[in-house]
Image (cartoon, rainbow, N blue to C red):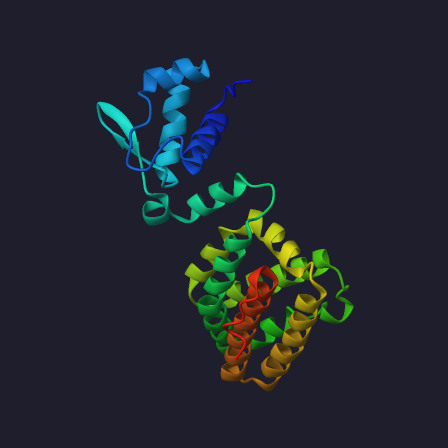
Length: 232
């Protein structure tokens, strides 16, 4: 059944790009032909194309069909969200990429937040003692901690980055925390981090965050394929 909305058209074009039906650096069908294919008016197609351009998937050219971008090089944060919308299950490799990204981001905004709002960071741990040992509870707590810490950081870019993953973070985290060993490691980290915050030691907290982000990646890769490059 043809999807008769701009949202449906956008999703189908993204799916075609990801599957290789619409190839990178090649042109889409002209606007008129897309309207015929989806059985909609050209304004609906134009709306879908404009959104695709904003999300980094295509480049609209005046008087010519839009061209497909190399989305890994020309995309943006919305491109990532669009990719994950196409998957009922979050790809394992994508979780690895996110864990790698956290090695750089989390220690920085954790240290900064403690420097500026130590008491408010402490308040983020108020529910840690009641944390249930299941994937959903850990996913919720971890998101609350990450988002809250980033919000207390003086650099607003960190929060904008995390907000971009709001709709998909739970899926990724539940998949990660489905392993009891991952939950145990994170619980130990929460305790260690809280001690550093209570001491008022931003550097110790930064080091603890960096070590845990590396360990998370190590544990995940070990589950995937036996790699353990960040264990040391």
